[in-house]
Image (cartoon, rainbow, N blue to C red; front, side):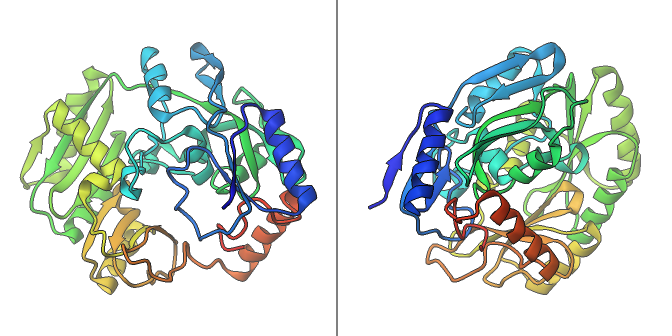
Length: 373
């Protein structure tokens, strides 16, 4: 049985990691744990949970900057930002229910650690693009800092980006500073019925290339193709009319506000779309021009498209066959199969990843094997 360690401050995190370095024992680094099934299986001596580090250290609404600890719940963070009419522009998802956990247990540490982003990713950037600074404990048992609290301070910014999406393999994040965005004044969502996937990709690509600041483009074969426009109330009708012209002579309807919010939450969190549990679920990032070929090559039991066709969620027994892009195994089958978590990198990228791992964690005690090394 592994030890469970739940420090309440950064010094205790540093001490715990330092102790394991001395003992030569490995650590499972996590925050709340709702996303811990993402990644390859690990065999560690102890679990180090950062969920008790859950404070907001600094919030300057007028500067659109917030500094917080990893254990802050996403639902609490969203409620705080809502008071000031602000948001995380990359629209972080709650994948807990998809992975068999209760909703609203996700933390900002989990989102940053796995670099997860929602439907706005194709136009607003991903989680990694909103990190201004980061602080944590490396595999040397030392505190490190990178970046700062303002956009102009880019010192150490590459380290901040490395930590985002490192799945706890490079260090334990104890504090992060994020760039915020004003929440849009209003939004409109349109639905196009009866498009096959070829037409859906073609239309989404055309709309994504237009100058009308579309914030959501997704295609669900069972439900339709969805378009979201955000911004000032005064501009929405004009932009909607321009987009309808691009759509042409097809059946278009406008969603009611509540229906629109539910639909984009479903797209963001995937679980309400009901991918079959008896098949592996893959997340595949490819160029929209390649996505039809990937679908046809696998004939998946379930799929839907987000990010204007650049993101494919697909249920199939097969390891995705893609020439360009990346894939991740988000959920294995109910009877787990021996499958890789992500696409095997090319030799140069693999060698660089291992060098970075060794530079941050020379004894390989932090989440060893979670990313395949």
